[in-house]
Length: 290
Image (tube, rainbow, N blue to C red):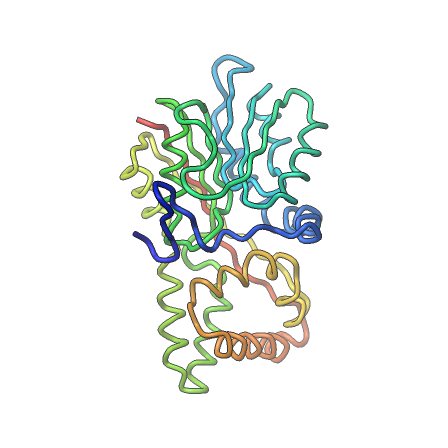
């Protein structure tokens, strides 16, 4: 079983799926989605296939957070029914409020407590997994869950950061490791980098998990920051990137803090006369349940 996953009876609970606090849910909606997650949502909308008959779409949104990109999905798919699941009650409340204002959408949101999710088996024409939470190596659990809830021929669309995303951070962490002879940090960076899939690996994963007609698209985008402090205190970094780096690097907290303090100082030193840009390789894979 993948690291970071614990079993409870016949359920599997991901130990790193962290609920958003009420204040963080509002910040996520206001800042993280338009600044960061929209890049993933744009690719999802390009790859999702509308049903032959308007009104037939039944969408499972796994790890739905505050309900993005529900409004755009309805514009793409037509009148839809949707069931979303997430561990955060605060995020689900916000998702419900947003969905109530979307014409042609009938939405239901349920609390995620572990795998399998509370969604019924084999009932959905589409399954959306946008930037799956938890360790990168356990994304397979989300794809398996999508396969479980889809009807035969149903479409999964999975969007996430690909290999070589955030390479600037990896380079600065390696620089820290070299300067302070911190071999454990260098090894952790190499291991964490390898957890992210290439486009080819992402497609192969979907095929191995029971999906056909698999297609993968990707693009590189730049996320700008004004300073090292801005980088580490930005809502996207605080709510999404730092928790994931902390999990995937698996360093003790003292070493992790020292390494990222170095990152902050290095950004200010190397980019003192201009903004710093973090490279993100957005990947999106789709496939149809066999």
